Image (cartoon, rainbow, N blue to C red):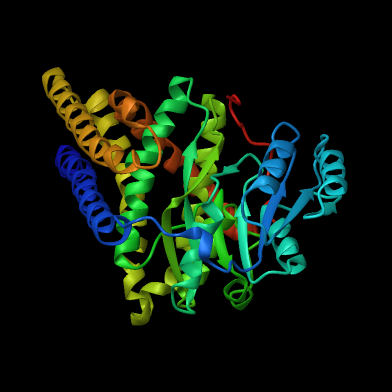
Length: 409
């Protein structure tokens, strides 16, 4: 038992260290080669029509603000398709009123909750444009976010299937919100930059992403039986050799959970969705044509194994190891290493994201991140795996529930 614990402890320490160095290096190269460019003259381009898809379920607190903001964006050639997916609150009545006020707003009013993927599929069939912008019902797009997303399609090859934007957090008053701000800056942004450099990414950001309708139709639109439609459609597109790009200038301001219960539900869903995808798409490792996505696929399993290893090693030193000194050495060394690693990665990532958002002042909240978030996420992954396996066996539509949107500031 001791030998196993010692071996796993080595993996628990080195895996996040190596991955962090890969993310930092990849993000830096992406920033210098593909992101560090002059401003684009957005006012002298003949912009094509876009359809903005907004799926909604029990969003009476945020939906009117989101729709009005989309209407006022300086992108004239657009239509807004809101889908009320069987909401139990006033979402439907609010959308009916807004559709009468604004000619660019169209409404699909479903009487039954069939899930976000089904809502998006309906909106896609109803859309008039070739380029689709998917936006969550609590999100506020930056003034020129649509232009930056569409610009990629206009200046790239015909195999560009999707462009994912850059989510930013707008509720920043609580410790939990600040921790998520640190996460989006130091981990999510760095990972997307590094993965995009290799040619493939794990997932688009469901809160703000643009699609080529032709690509979506070819892969069969969104999967209605997957709990995270954004991760699922990302893998379907790339498995059919459609390209996905990351556009950090396409900012989107969103609300995040500010309670432990809300974060738990959200992260269980994310973890389960990622595990469902790697369980469904395991055949990519058998096809040499998909070799560029192999690193992402194997990294998902390595991350899953790390979570189980971390829990095992920590439990061993707490409850099995007879030496109190050994336990304290392990916990102190591991904690110190994680904190130092997170601070280095955070400092680097904030220096990049500060171009778009004043996030440098949140640097010192990174000290809380390893002790609270890494521990919680490891436990979440363990809880999510059985749910992902049951979901693959059971099947059926993946419906959604009302999320925790935090405080609106």
